[in-house]
Length: 225
Image (cartoon, rainbow, N blue to C red; front, side, top):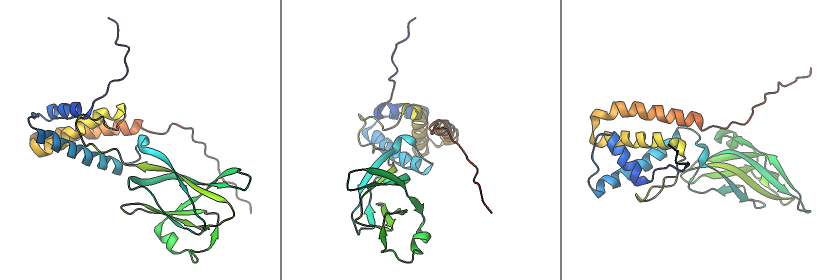
């Protein structure tokens, strides 16, 4: 028998909820059942952001820097910065991407003169409800500067059952088992232990696969005396 030749299998929110309810041993009956399931999905996606870097949620964000301004507000859905560079443009429109070091709150506090100007070489991310980037030195007017950052962003909210989740196919199993676990906690506690175990196993498999496969080269440092 011939195969389908199709490689597009996915689940929309409605299908995910139905599958999760079946795993949890409960029946989807009312509109409120779907509503509470969607709410649980959003809570689950928020938890995924706490479990590590989900590669598909990384996006490149470019912020134009202004001379004399040290603080820049990111998007409210930006969770963290994975990596960043300062792009410097000279008067001939030649651009150079230069590394910038990320420092912590204490290191930033201990900078003696936070008003000194130059090319920014250090970045402090103040992770408030809406994250704020603080740069040092403060950008000067010698060049045009941009901060180019790879940011971890929130997964798109689930607001209706006819939507598609912002989840790659490799995370479909843990999305279903995770939602089943959340719903069992509400409606069928007898299955919580089994579903919790299945959910954690599915998530680990997906997270272990969701990684950067770039080559890593380590070079020992040479010290001169």
